Length: 370
Ligand code: GLA
Image 1 (cartoon, rainbow, N blue to C red):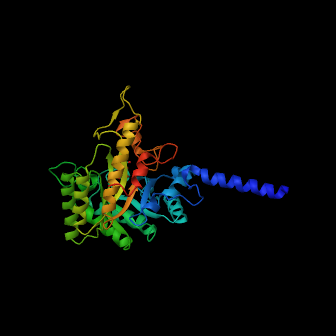
Image 2 (image 1 turned 45 degrees about the vertical axis):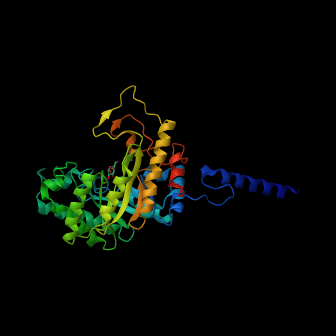
Image 3 (image 1 turned 90 degrees about the vertical axis):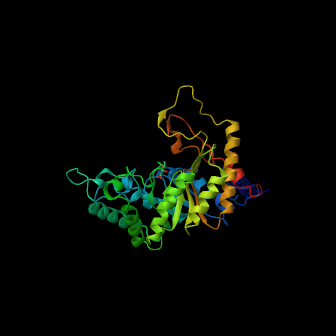
């Protein structure tokens, strides 16, 4: 065989073996292996929350492109990071994320405009450091929302307009300790939606919350949403965060919550899904010296079953469920690694630390199992 032909053959072999071995992302016959987004093409977009660092890492960026067709900024669009001082916006990181989404044909969700956390301190104070009044608060909210939503008009298709405004206390509907509530009572919620709608009339506007499948909290969130809708406020969707665990929630509670929100004519999204391997805990603490934090085969099995059940339920509601987003990409990094227990590793996602699909992944893409 002539040298040139031999060289060509060699090059083809190298290319083929790279192709077939590439991080499980290509099937053996050389066609791209389907990712989560492809399995769910007929159902809903599958998203992940990302940071600029994740997108710069070639391995993680590759995984994101193969598996997901929607992105949410983990932090860079929150008021603190994007609007650190009264007249200063930090657009760079958010712009770069949108560029990545566009280059890879992905949708982008906006997160979040009004939240009692990660809101810059200056937002609630005057020049003398005193708490501002309601009119100033509304003026600042309007300026912030118009600037952020306006900049990404027609590019961000859905916004989490208000995050976590409902109380965890059964006796009250609203989170009364939020500085927004302290200054303006409940009125700030409707205002936020109105400002967002004015800035981008085409964007889908969501209310987003955690524990949003707990029957008591479902009632309180329902009350808030119904009050807004009855008053003609432009709310289009309910975001169920979905910070869940191998210990819950139950199938019945998830179904009940989705049906209840959908009964208001709203679309529903799962906006921040992860499945912790630990029972839920409410208070921050340090990991005890002998406390285990390994991902045992039993926990892998439990987590896989739980993921399988969640997605089976999600598929059943494809007519109202318009997106499922994971909070982070792989077990390399999760916000749960240090929360609520400092120094404890968690393994809540569908890809392991080597970016390979876990047992749960195969449950999620197996549509035959009931
Ligand atoms: C909430 C917020 C998210 C994120 C998570 C934890 O759910 O909505 O933006 O901060 O907490 O990281």
